Length: 241
Image (cartoon, rainbow, N blue to C red; front, side):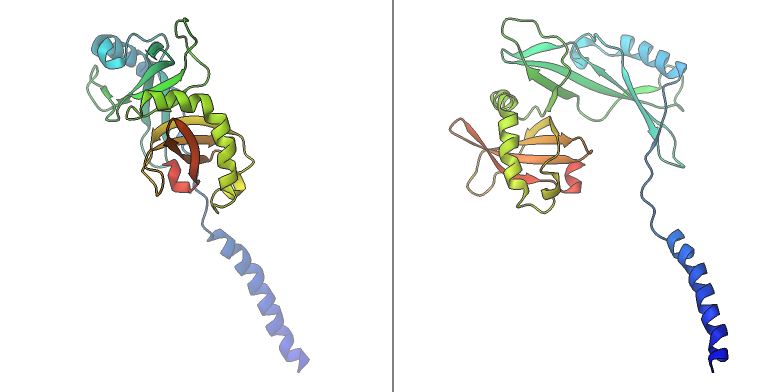
C-alpha cells in the first residue's frame, strides 16, 4: 500500500515545486516609475525662442530671472511628455508676502517647427513665502503653493503658524486610520488651498504637507475670530491627486 502511495506523493511534490513560481509570476506587479530624460538641444533652443518671442510679461508674471525647468517623462509604450516651467521674478504680493508665478508650457514634436510649444491648459501657479520688512523680495529655497482663492491674510497667518498647526494636527493622526502611521514623519508645508466648511467650523482653510516618505497630508484648519485651529486631517492616497 505504501509503495502505491509513493508515486502519488512524488507527483504532488513535483507539482508544488512547479506551481509555486508560476503563482508568483502571476502576482500583480507594482507600477513602474515613469522614464525620465534631459531635454534635447532642439527642445531647449526652441523653447528659448518661443518664450522670448511669444510670452509677454503680463502673462508670465514678469521677466524671468531663471532658466526653464524641464519635466520630461513617459510610461512604457507611450510617447515622451515634455513640459517646461518658468518662474517669474520674485515680487511683493502684499507687504507680508513675496510671490513668484510659475507658468507651464507643453511641447509637441509633431507640430511644424516654430509652433511646437503651447501654453499649458493649467492655470499659472502662485508660490509665496514670508517677506522680510523693508527688503526687496529675492528667491527663496522653500516656497508654498497658494491657491489664488485663499485670502492673503490667511496665507500670511498660516505661513507663520504652520509648525504649531502641524504639531496639533499630529494629535488628530491617531484617530484617523489612514494617518496613524504618518504621525512621526517629517513634513514640509507645500500648499494652501480652500477647504469645504465642516460642522461647527464654517470658515476653513486647507493646508497641504508633504512628507519625507513621498506621502501627502491635508489638514483642514478652522478660522474663528482671527484664531486658527487644526480641525481634521486626511491622509488618503487619493488626496495626493
